[in-house]
Length: 518
Image (cartoon, rainbow, N blue to C red; front, side):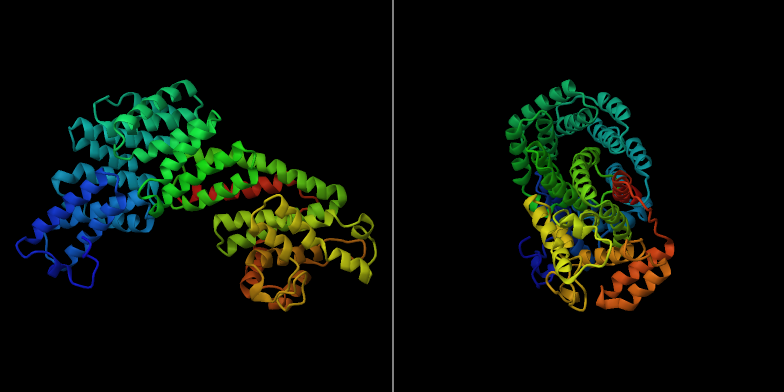
C-alpha cells in the first residue's frame, strides 16, 4: 500500500499471479479490517487504492459498486462531505445492480448519508429497505440504532427512546456501545440524569474491558458532555483528551468540531463566555456540511448566546447612558452590515464577528467627554482629534476583555479609508480588513441618513450616490456592490432600534443557515 501512490502504475506494483478480481477482493477485506479497527484514514487510503485500481482494470460491475460503496463510507467516517455526496449520487444510479450480499449495507449507508448531508431526505425509506433485506439480528439492530439517531437529530426524543428500548441486547460490544451512546445523548437532551448515569456506567465499563469497539470515539464526546453538565471538569478534560488522541482526529472535521464543543463547555464552566463563544462558532463552522447539527450543539449555542447577549447588553447600555444616538446607531449599523456580509457570502464565523464588531464599533466613545460627544455644532480641530481616538479606545477595552481579534479589528479600523485618509493608522484599501470595510460603509450610510444637531439627514438616494461616488476611496468595489444590492432590496432602519430585537434577528438568521441547508 505504501507504494500505491507512487508514479509507478498500480498494475506494475501488484503481482501478476493475482487476477484483478482477487486483488480487488483483498482491497475490500483490508478496507473493512481497518474500519473495524477504528483506523479510518488507513481504510480511506486503501479504498482510494481500490478506486484507482478499477479505473485501470476491467472488473465486474458488482465489484465496482462495492468499491464505490466502501470509498463513500470511508470518506463519510472522516467527514469528507463533498466526496461523500459525489459517491452517494453515483450509487443511487446503480440501485438495480447492487450485489445481493451488500444490498442491506448499501441501503443502510444511503440512509446515513441522506440523514446527514444536504439534499433529499429519504433516510427512512432507505432504512426500511435495508431492514427488509436482512434477517440477521446484528444488522437489524444497527439499522434500528441509525433510525433512532435520525430521530434524535430531528429532536424527536420520545420516538428515539422507544426505538432504543426495543433494540435486542446481544453480546456485541460495538452494538452495545452505540446503543448506550445514543441513550446517553438523548437522556442528556431531555435532562434525565438518572438514566444518563446508567448509560455512562455501561459505557465506561465497556471502554474499560472492550476499548476497541467500532466507533468508541463517539462515547468520549457524550461522556465528556455528561461530566461537563455535572461540573466535573477533570473528567470532561479526560474525555476531551481521549477524543483528541484518537488516530483520525487530525483528519476529521467532525471530530474536531465535537472537540471544540467540549472545549466551549469547559470555558463556560470557568465563566469564560467570550472564549466559549469563539469555540462554539468555530465548531458550527466545521460542522456546517451536515444537514442537521446535533441537538447538543444547537442547545449549547442557544444557551451560550443567551449568556453572551447579557454581556453585549451591558456594553450597549453603557454606550446608551453616554449617548443614546450612538447606541441606536451602532445597532442599526450592525443590522445593515450583517446583510452586506450575507451578500458577500461570508462564512458563519465571519458573519458573527461582523455583527458583533459592528454593534460595538463605537464602543470607544464611552471614554469621550459628553460635551464633545453631544456638541450641537461642528467640532473644532482639538475636539476632532479627541473624537478620532475612539477606535483606539474601543479596541483597547475589547482586547482587555479577550474579544476575538477579528472583532477588535472592526472596532479599530472602521474609520480607515481606501485612499489612506482615514484614521487611526492611515491604511490604504488592501490593508483594511474586509469586515472593517463593510462596517465603514454601513456606518457612513447610517450617519448620513439620520438627523444630527448640526445637519439634517440626507435621503437614501443622496446617501447612496455619495457612497458610489466615493467608491474605492471608501471601500472595495465588492463591498460597495453588496451595499447597493441591500439598499435595492430595502434596509429596515428604525429610528430607535432595540438591542434584543436586532440581536434576536441576527441570531435567528445565523441558526437558520444550518436548517435551510437541508
